Image (cartoon, rainbow, N blue to C red; front, side, top):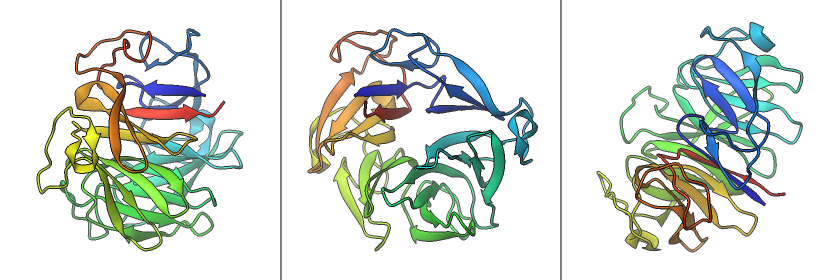
Length: 280
């Protein structure tokens, strides 16, 4: 298994930069990622160009407006949160870009994940009444055939990343409440997992169980094959590990920002914003 930790200079498995989507092929590069491999990264332009927009098309003819996160389904199609375009876009394996979701009450998509049964879920910063503040994060179910997005949970704070644990469990990291929660997308029930749950949120760098643990702007959760969850703790320059029961420990990094490869307890990160897990 390889854990790929994307830093602020290049945040995701597909790296969104302005209107350009680039595909990281392998390894780790000094500017964009830090992992156990010593192989240099290679990035190619997969779709889009340096110009922003919402045009569908193939390869460089397509336009995006601040693509921020992606998910890949079993067919190899890439689904993109086009944040400032207020859309979900699909890129085929041949680079053809189409719009999946574009509805007037669907604004600022950021987190995106597929559950094991192939259902797509997306979090937005705004709710379906177009209100947007530190509390209005909303989880949507997206029908891939019709493109219709339907609200399944509201008042989620400001989620910065989603990961599916199962068909009925989606983990989200909230950078305003500084906690990690589980949402059941079928019932809409929200269950605290780790970190405090208060009106304004409490920051810190504390390992512990459930509400005793502290984070500082948790980002980009990922689920390990054993069910444990990794979260990029941006403000603490570290990667945290959360068990299914909510016990939190430090997986790698420390409060000290830096760029250093090495053993988990020796590596340093600088404001990590996402974690991706390769099951190989």
